[in-house]
Amino acid sequence: MSPFRARRERLLEAIGPRTAAVFVATANAIRNNDVEHDFRQDSDLFYLTGFDEPDAVVVLTQRAKLKLDDKDVEPRLTMFVRVRDPEREVWDGYRVGVEGAREQFGADLAFPIEELGKRLPELLLGHDALVYRWGNKAFDDKLFVAIQGARRTAGRSGARAPTRMFDPVETLHEQRLRKSEDELAHMRAACAITAEAHAKAMAIAAPGRYEHEIEAVLLETFRRRGAERAAYGSIVGSGPNGTILHYRKNDRRLEDGDLVLIDAGCELAYYASDVTRTFPANGRFTDVQRAAYEVVLEAELAAIELVKPGVTQGQLHQRAVEVLTRGLVKLGALEGDVEGLVKSEAYKPFYMHKTGHWLGMDVHDVGAYFAPKRGDDGVVGDELAQRPLEPGMVITIEPGLYFGIGADKAKPGEKGVKDWSHLRGIGIRIEDDILVTPDGHENLTRAIPKSVAEVEAACRG
Ligand code: GLY
Ligand code: MN
Ligand code: MN
Image (tube, rainbow, N blue to C red; front, top):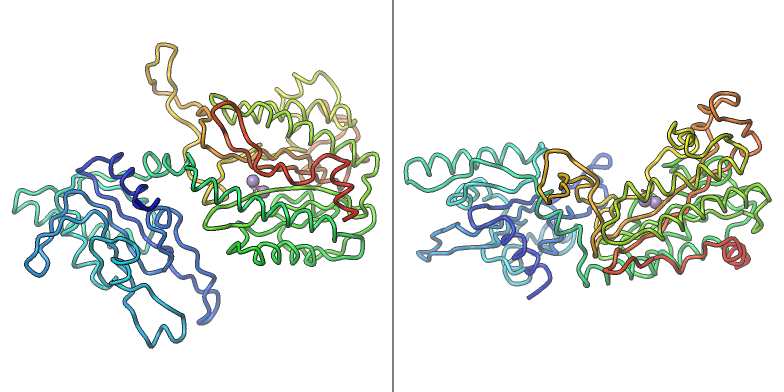
């Protein structure tokens, strides 16, 4: 069985025989005039089919019965796709088409996308619920019209029509959250490419170079080694730009004495990597930079160390916050009792984001962060709580310290804040991709230089 078919079967099993599921391809987005943005398929649709064309709808069913050419068909996978069109293919390239959907993608039924309105109501008949991520303005209405159509027929014939709708978060996204071996193979390969890119970036960075030159080296490595794209806009922030969390301009000239923060990862076969490293532009940390770097590194290592099944992301964040706060005292930015400073969130002007997120097909991957709390008696209650990690989940760990615009909220003399001006302009984040294993964890990006000595060596090239 192809991995895609196996995933569909698992989903159908999870949702039960009376529930159908509908997935819609990402729409082509206009960049300007008649030029389109690069297309990337919807992750759910790709996860279930491997199909990467726009203008497509995938319907999974277990109770649909259609009569086609006098034959009764009970499809499990139905695909609506663009038809072959030699005129358009001259301009835009090959299309899989209706036959290709059946032959190459294992569809039991395939129709031209134009037939969606006519066929969808028949496919929904026999089901009383639907898995669909509503909120897709262009598609919601079409689906509701199809449900109405199914309802009309059902009312007259005694068949079922959907009366309930579920978001895929409880079924498909739970499946996506736990990576299979074949998914992990893609993630490891993506991380290997990203590792090469970061090492290269450290080697070529030097005072006088521009941030965009370094971005070009990252992208060159990604594409040369076969990654389709960056998993998100690459961040190359030198000097004060390293304190801007989603810095994207990448147009500044590196100066002697700058730190350079690179947050970049490739996407390979639809799987993301997400890595941050911070290093000195001239290859040597100054004393104050090194001291701050070592605080962030200690926080990162301490949080990674804790990763194992049963631990929550909240606990990892808490651990990182404790180490960072102790470090802020050591660096002279805060003063007082560390526990009290953590409680009063005195660290927040210098560390304003969370310590990690799910990673997978999407860089900020799907999956619920909270789940209903189970009491000591094992009974599921009403309250939500941070969910425990499980083997096969992949997360990032990415603490940082930022002495930029955000830090100006920390006024020296106010509760716990000292004069931190000696740190101004420093922005540091260190980020790795961590797989939860049955006995602990595996750092998928451990090959990328990280200790002070490794980073300085990598900067020498
Ligand atoms: N690059 C986005 C993030 O680190 O979450
Ligand atoms: Mn990142
Ligand atoms: Mn991240």
